[in-house]
Image (cartoon, rainbow, N blue to C red):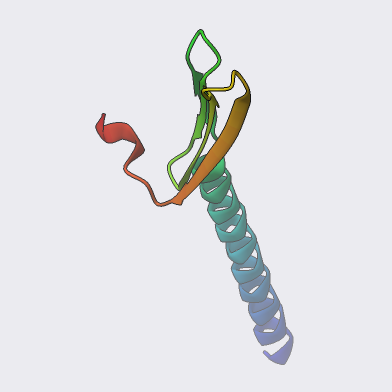
Length: 84
């Protein structure tokens, strides 16, 4: 009787351990998908954007009056990327 209880508890423990491992893997995959970005840029190379669900990173390259380029960047957390 005692031996059967121990094996049952061990089996339950192993099932819970496998279940926790599966949950961790699923959560990690979801986070990776949310952080995966894709590049959006125009042909002139003036604006370059990397957009994901959780963030957006954009660099602007502009020509000023003296003929020199200057570069600025913008980083947004939780942007509304897909509205426009």
